[in-house]
Image (cartoon, rainbow, N blue to C red):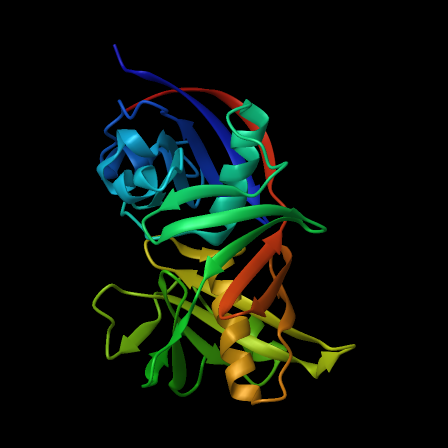
Length: 285
């Protein structure tokens, strides 16, 4: 008999996940099983899986457990590959813990990830996660994508996972991208990278807040309606390009909605909603 799993479907600005409670770490999901769960025709359908497991029950949670953190977000891409972090996923993860009665956000909530411990709080947009410090790579990456007439330079930004951010001149070129085809990167990062295509608003800054639009191709997934860490990386890249007078607060419009980004004391923060859509059971292939 196939094993039956309880699950909850959730999303953050359209970036959707299958949330699987596994507090004691008894599940060992293969890449193929994750891929079937995420398949939009033969499974539940999602951009990835969030397994909710205690830090003491997963080897990768050891450091977080030693720091007194109870929960670890085991994030898997839609193809089953393991990813360091997912910004939208952290908010859905926190919402799930809260709804399940496993954690409270009356005080800041810490969760373990492969990119370290992340802290979440309530915010006017829903939830805000401290993604931590970021790193801008010194050398550009050349990006080829279907719909762009000539290759464009992209800025490498690491916010716990790797991103390449490409500036486009106008909304027409952004909307004309065909992201059913994997963008080609040169040099190709050893871990791969998510690729963000951004168009600055005109004016770029209004009432002290910067504004951009973005589409994203996520490694191991394809185009998604939103990517939280990608939103942060895009805002950081445009801020870098804009120079010393650029603001520390940004709004980023993605196909799935709007997210907020702010920079403070060397950390970047991401804020936005998190929605739990439905719960059920599924037979594990």
